Image (cartoon, rainbow, N blue to C red; front, top):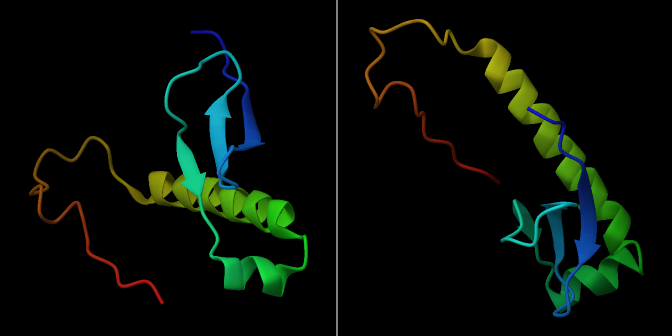
Amino acid sequence: MSPSFFEIVQLSNGDYALRRIDDDSAPLVKISFSEEAREMMEDRDMNVAKAMIAAGIEAVGNVAHDIDWEDDELDAADSQPSYTLH
């Protein structure tokens, strides 16, 4: 399998997206900021979007290391904990 390369782009509606460079299908991730949030960031929204995507990738890596992929006894409900984000 060949490696994939990703890019962060700004969409025509002002949202940011993570997508594969060689693929025009739907983005893997979209980030949308309210007008209030954009004003608070003072033109640093691209940097914030990059940081959010980097944090998400790191979190996925941490979760992937915590999962025992060969444990067949896990119930589907147990393998998908619910989280409340604040």
